[in-house]
Length: 331
Ligand code: KG4
Ligand code: ZN
Image (cartoon, rainbow, N blue to C red; front, side, top):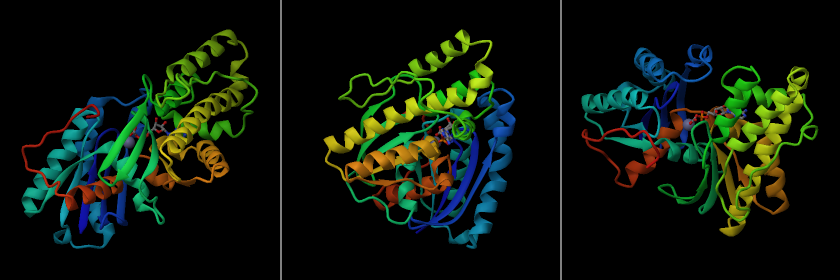
């Protein structure tokens, strides 16, 4: 089944062609970073307008580079939510019209399920059941995944998402947007043990997170070292990153132990973080647990993961009619 995936939930206009939910024939991601970086974050109205400008070209490019004839598309999968409503509506309406025009089935995909299923686009995906840590700019949660269509949320952030904390700390330090990848690179030059920021575990036996405290600690550190913090930026970001990574890895492995899973995954934009990848692999290795992490291009928002999730929706009877609508917050 050849599926055209479309993703417009935030600031990336993306389209991909995926065969049987596993083989990526093409994946095109058009980022709006340049437009939003001057505002230090995504401006929703600007983002939806940019999606309108980009969508036709991005889909055409995805079809062209896949090497298939446009008429070979068997079904469409499109992000339904969560995300920015105006942005979601662009991809959603386009996908409905495209499917209607070709007379083919289509399905609306939960963006978070797309991230979780991104590991199935890589060789050697995890067997069920497994534990997945989804850490992105909008969400951070731990899931018990028992099939391609059933994922139980075990715990999630009570305030900021992990990626959001990276972005906010980068903004405080004047490092630019989006902060995650900038901090990841700068942290390599710093000493993670020099400044010991607190780790917020909340209940150490539970799976909820909180990242607003660490953000406040960094802010306080900047205030109390206002004359010399600029020279300490690599150590500050390395210390901050280490604190976030420690908590994420701890809770992920705790969930694996509690659910007796020998396979875990990390997905979402923050899964591109090198230190997180290393730390989780090291901690998991000590417990004989295998870690599955998508390549960096599949961690950030993309449409291949939406096509993959759409494939599993469709083969499980999830075809949808044109009355379906988008949603902004996690269902
Ligand atoms: O999954 P994603 O592309 O979009 C959402 O669904 O939110 O995640 C974007 C988030 C941003 O907050 C970004 O700063 C973060 O992922 N991110 C990273 C890295 N690359 C992207 N965070 C830490 N380290 C990275 N290397
Ligand atoms: Zn995402």
